[in-house]
Length: 258
Length: 222
Image (cartoon, rainbow over all chains, first blue to last red; front, side, top):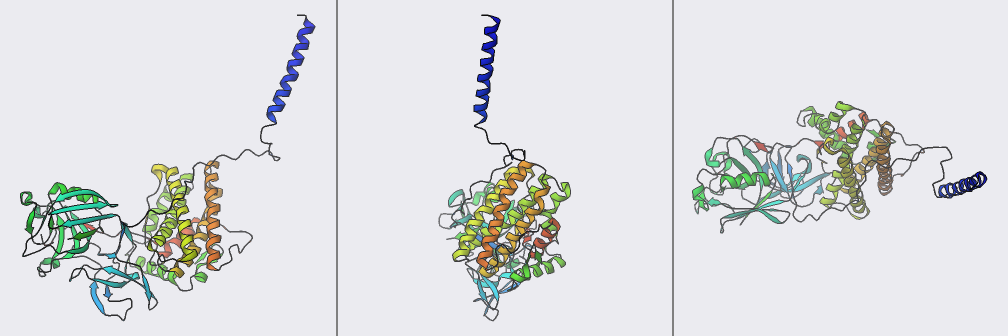
């Protein structure tokens, strides 16, 4: 090929190149008239909003911020049911389990609360402002006296099953719906094992017991006696089981004894 | 108490929020709530470490989103709202929870922990809810507006603006439901962080955890 032919071929290829470049640039975004850079992509993504999960396994509790009087119905002029202290006998913040919706009476909101008083199962209306913020739990402890067994449920599923000791016929473990009020650890009382939960249940017979005869759920130094009817009303567990329960069961958990 | 163009007292005619604020103030003065420390634990502590960094700004946004998400979630759970207010709480609550998830994911291990809240009854009484929701949405919008120009990373700014406009829509929605003009001014003013924190602290909605554990010997029936 002559030098002239090479020159002609080069000119044709250059022309083709210009056409290709021009045609590819036609598919790009038009440049900003102000010459601004493209906006950066967001650094994080907002996920799809999700509705709340069903709450049939939820229970709600609130701390007692100031001592008050529980009443039979919403309103300061209603009959008194019980005194509600701000502290438990163990020195922790007293809590109540919230049952149902608040109601307005006398210009104030009132909340129905399950109370840690005798007779067991008592509830009453307390001013909303005497309580602190609500906390929800998804756990529930079922104490089965006939089977001498406790089962912890979370979100409706069993997460722990343990053999238990319960009260004797003379000092029975009370039946009903209660809740965990507090949790004690690092004490030197081997009979209670390494950990003890206080509940809202009270012994109906040991009313002169120190601190009021509240029923606890705790470990033991006599594991060979479990399962059995061996206590003064408390629910006893083997120490390994109460430690597991301590990891799984938050304060405020409903306790159903049947 | 003034939030942007909005006086909280103008909306809070029943006094629910102001009552809660005074209660919190009284408790704080008596040392029962640990003073402003309960709020500082959630907001001011990270601010003290690296105020003005993008991470600090995102944590500040996260704290406000925690507050809003908890407010709407509790209102929905308690079931005291009816009609359009229940629908607003359901939709906006899901948005606020999504904002929390996004900010927590973006911050990873640097994300502040969720504070505890005590809404003192405003989530279980529709008139009190309405007033508080208006105030919260205006507050959130004004807070984002103040922080946006301070964000250094344009990618973070792009993400934050996606939230900011949604907060403004929430504000317009609840204002409409509350019978308040949705867009009263041609220009919205930002609200500095110091004032936002003071408003939130005054409500008493951010609280300390109750003491439910102890080390004493049990005196249960045994």
